[in-house]
Amino acid sequence: MNKEIKRFDMNKPPKKTKWFFKPIIKLICSPAFKKYKPEITYVNGAENLKGPFLLLCNHNAFLDFKIASSLLKKNDANYVVAIDGFIGREWLLRNVGCICKRKFTDDITLIRQLTRTIAMGNVAVIYPEARYSLCGTTAVLPRSLGKLVKLLKVPLVTLICHGHHINSPFWDTSHERGIAHTSAEYTQLFTKEEVEKLSVDEINKGIVQAFQYDDFTWQKENNISITDENRANGLHRVLYKCPCCKTENKMGSQGTKLFCTACSHEWEMTELGELKAINGETVFSHIPDWYEWERSEVANEVEEGTYSSGELTASVDSLPNAKKFIHLGIGKLIHDMNGFRVAVTDKDGDIHEMVKEPASLYSSHIEYQYLFKHGDCVDLNTLTDTWYIYPEGDFSVTKMALATEELHRKFLRSKGRTLIPGMF
Image 1 (tube, one colour):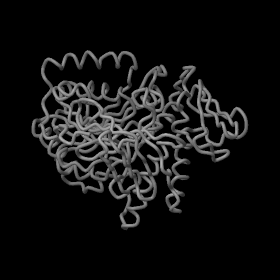
Image 2 (cartoon, rainbow, N blue to C red):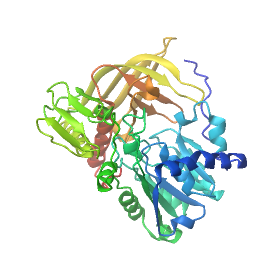
Image 3 (cartoon, helix red, strand yellow):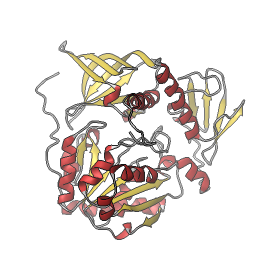
């Protein structure tokens, strides 16, 4: 790989959205309101709030961006977007106000960019979960959010959308499920004066409380029926472990059914998003309960010191800039009690390594069937590069994501850190 390859320039200051893009953005976003008929609840004066302020949004589907952009109305905004969002369209994204970020890195440059955003009078928009929710519930949040709020000294607003996951679940984005309507709470969580008075911990606790959501509970409470005949397709990517026989990576899904090929148990995904056993015991009717059980199983392995993916052969792509992926080669991936270790030899015979210890990574970003052709992957980041790593064989990237969080939790406990539930 060419060591002199140009890296993405993270230091370019954020821009205000070009005037000629504003009507185009409105034109793109408006149909979402007509199609999904979102019921918006405005809390504590958020409806008429003018920038600058900080907006934190939950993250379930691309629809999130359309709703946020529409609710901001005439407010200029700068959105924090992952590096892969810029591929082939860097000029466009920069000129609509986007700020680039490599996921799960401690990036002081981003702080400077957000400070500039506020200084321009704009709204700084962040999706702090840093990935689409795996099963329509809250992902872990970084403790640094409270410090950022105190640093920016502006009102803190949250946008929590409901229904986006069940309409286009991360585990299968090949088609929408045809949801009838969605809803959202648009809340001024803290005024500027409250931000000045509150402690970092108090702000963090407020953020965690605001970010409690569960799309499947929302679906049942609102009697939202999804009749799509392929509504369970891909669900096995999240629910990778059978609760009946405890076998991993033998789950499958097709149409409206989820099944285990090891013990032949089957479940039907109902129109209200519940699971019902076709044969044997249901065990978990609520999908997020199954997912959290998997987390507890991983947590037990971490506590016992036995967690390991083993050594996996993996194809590795690099994304140093927004032009295109560069194939590094075929290498080895290990994820165990020491974190991630990746080694790959490129076509020139040079060895490249990526090491991410539990202390340095509180969560990880994964993709299912990335770009609909490459397969499941985990991506790891430095400040200048992003590796997309596609393992082969018997593995689950969902388990890797859960293990990353549990390994970091174990590290924090070993250091005597007081943990805020739902936040690292």
